[in-house]
Length: 149
Image (cartoon, rainbow, N blue to C red; front, side, top):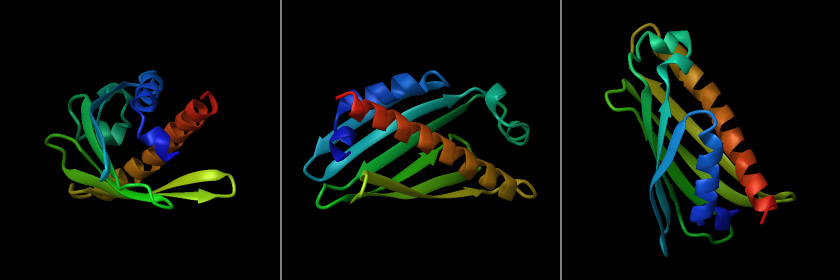
């Protein structure tokens, strides 16, 4: 699995699949002795956002997601953060890659903070629920990519 994360062909395959849903690009990608660093760019059309999100997001939502994975030694750990220019909150998380009976698992733990009175909590819950779907889709794409190698 770590080899996939370190392979630019994997990320391009993932972006190609994700473009079926919205605009997605890898902006930066670096592999070094200290690990893997990448910056992903996602654009979600405002029309695709839930109604409650459209009350505060007046244009297409542009998301910059930065991921960093440490070097692989019996697993790997990493962090991510996502930002929306002018957005009223933050999205951060940790990632842990480890072997299991089925091969490997990448466990992601996320925290969303939205600083808008009355609707912030609802938006945080909505973000985290949708994020689970995004991560599951990305995991399926990675599994398919690995199976095709």
